[in-house]
Structures are given as C-alpha cells and as structure tokens.
Amino acid sequence: MHKAFSLFSGGLDSLLAARAVMEQGVDVTALHFITPFFGYKNKGKEAQAAGDFKEKYGLSVRIIDVSPEYMEMVKKPVYGYGKNFNPCLDCKIFMMKKARALMIEEGADFIISGEVLGQRPMSQRRDAMSIVERDSGLKGFLLRPLCAKLMPPTIPEEKGIIDREKLYGLSGRSRRGQMELAERFGIKDYATPAGGCMLTDPILSKRIKEFLYKREEPVDARDVQLLTVGRFFKFPAGTLHVGRNEKDNEKLVSLAGEREVIIRARDVPGPVSVFRGSPTEGEIELAARITARYSDNDGLDFMAMEVSSGQETRTIEVRPAPVSLVEELKAG
Ligand code: SF4
Image (cartoon, rainbow, N blue to C red):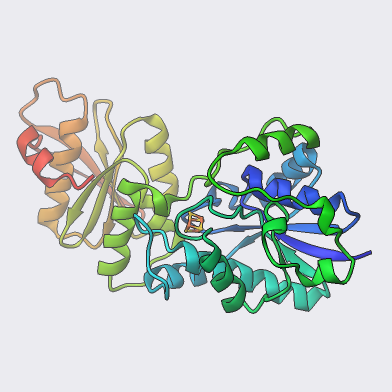
C-alpha cells in the first residue's frame, strides 16, 4: 500500500485533502504541528487529541511539537511577514521540510497539503506555492488535492498512485467547493479556516513581535503563552499580566514558574497578576498598585497585596494606582 503524510492544521481544507487521498486507497498519516502560536491547546494532551481526530474524522494524526525551531524561524523569515507577524511562506516551507524528512525516514511516497490556489494572499498564490515546493525540496512530491487540476501533475499522479481525474480544481476565496466536499465526505463539525494562528491576530502578534525582538534571554513557549493572557503591561524589567476573569487567573497561575512574581489582593476578590522578568522592588510595588486597582478595592486608600515568588510569600501595603496611570501604562 502506498503511503503519504498530510499536513493537517485541524481546519477543513487539510482534512478534505487527506480524505480525498485516503479515498484513493493511500495510507495517509496526518501531521499536526504545534507551536506556541497555534495548536498549543493540544500540548500535553496529544494522545487524547489524536484519538478525537480519529473518532471524528477517521484520520490517523501524529501531533508533533516543533516550538523551539519554529520560534527561531519566526524571528527571521526569509520571505518576510504578512499583514501582521505572520511569516506564512516560511511557515509553510518549515512544515513541508519537516514532512519531507518524515517522508524520507519512513519511506512514504509523497506529501499532501490542503492549499487552495488563490485562497490566501500571501501563501496561496501560484508563485508562492511554487516557492514553497522548491524551497522545501518537495518538487513533484507535493500533492494539493483540492486544486490539483489547476497545477502541473505531480509524481504520484504520473506514477499512477493517484488518479488525477478524481482530484479537484478549487480556487479563490469562496468556500462553496469545500462545503460541498465536506458534505460528500459526511464531515459536519470542523474548525474555522486559519485555525486560530496567533501570528495573524493584530493585538497578540504585536505583543509577540515586540517581546520576541526585545528580549535578550531566550524565549520559550511558556513566555509566548503568557503574552496571550490578561491585560498586558510593559516594564523595563519585564511584563506584567493581569487576569481579566477567573479563567485568566487560573491560566496565569498554571503558567507561572518558580521565577515569576505572583501578586494578588490578600483580603478581597481580584485578579491574579504575574510579573515575568526580574522586577525591582519599585516595579513590584507599581505592579501591586495596578493589581489593586483591578481588585474589589471598594474605595480603600490602602490595600494588602500578597507577593509570591518561588516558595516565599509576603504582604505589602499599597495605594491602588489611579485609573489614569493604569491606562497610561497598559500596553494591550
Ligand atoms: S497563518 Fe500562521 S500557521 Fe498559517 S501559514 Fe501563516 S504563519 Fe503559518
């Protein structure tokens, strides 16, 4: 039986592409890459997520965390960024190269991708699609079943592994063709296109861009996740993240490591704040004042704030910061 790997973002197009090839009797393994910018919700739950994909879509999915290398790529993409901080062309090349390595290692015949000609401005133009194929070393081995009839025949088609006549000729931004195919395959419940890539989000991508560029210490996946939670304040020594609700508070506590400073009101309900970096005493006090402002302060002049770092917890008394100061310091 012939084997192929397919790139699987979790969205409809990649799912349809894999299914279209499976229908032709090829053994397809879907590759779902995760990075701090997309797919990260499956981190630590890989087996469960793969089981869910199998049950829902009949797809065998391998979930692979490529965070460290991917983050390096995001800092200096060869082909630059799209509208926000999204290096789509380099991102595709990166993933195709990973898939290619597996193809060679495991003796698969080709790679499948759910791209549709002309659907996305940066990475799904004809010239961009050729660049991806060339730079990833997949020339001839990259089958795009959804728009294959508009592209030159690939090696699996020439070898007769795949019947070109049973592939599709979708193009443009309309989703009608994909909807019809989904119906044909009996797929009802699927994720929205783009799969929630943070690098295309105008607010989050701005935070990520500044943070990745300005920090001297290495940035890890947890740093990026922290950037996505709560209200965001920049300090000379780092960043302060103030929860907006219970869910944020829980996430902030789970993301805080030994070195982070956690601040919260001692006696009244309020947010959890996490300071990422090495704050001075003055910065801790200002962070506590900001946190106090968002707490249930009931007009109090002074509030007792708990400051925890590692195993140590102490209490400091601060005056809640005036709203004008909070607004001035808020970076997002
Ligand atoms: S939107 Fe995000 S995941 Fe998709 S190609 Fe662009 S950078 Fe990669």
